[in-house]
Length: 260
Image (cartoon, rainbow, N blue to C red; front, side, top):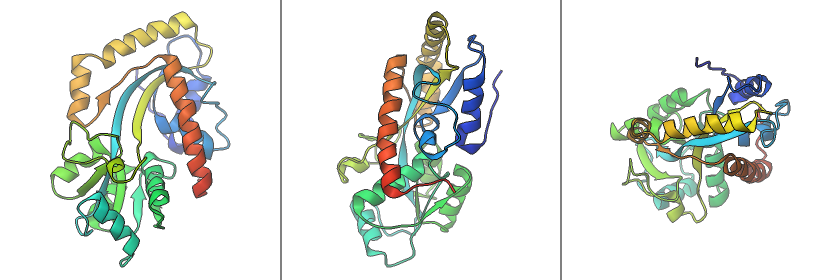
């Protein structure tokens, strides 16, 4: 049975996983932000994401893509940065919510380019993309699988992806890091379980998950949507969580990001 637990950017779902019996019957599939950003923004998390859950394996990785309304007079990264610095028209950017990957990517860009642009948080990707297509905001960072159909339909223009290299699913969209040194962010999703899960049970679950993730059916389905499969050991996943907590913690503090 699959049970969705929306609310508070994934905090409610994470708390449910952390409180579940450690018997192998409950696992969670979570985006990176639930483990690496929410602890920095929500003081009532009640879950130590580096220690308070059982890591199983990474599963999916994908880039965000910087997309603009077609009215924006920029077709590549250099032109877009120059556009931001001119500030000759009203410019704002949107995201799927405060603390989301789209928001943090936006703040990385502003930090690295030294410009100031207001952030408009939305309650999810759909309303953000609707307002971007309508021209109510000028740009956004969005998951490539979400934005790609709008790019292909000519409703949005792609400027660059956040991954170190272009996505195989969109090879014509360049990497932002080629023009903005050091700019890189790979979005990831992974499987976790309640804390205290017996190591033998955790390893058995991981073996089944890795087999499913690497299957031709899953790999093909994800590639068609602009994502890629990836697996890891629990130790590798935990190390990535700790690394990302440090990375985003520094940015959140520097940019004074708070949940309103």
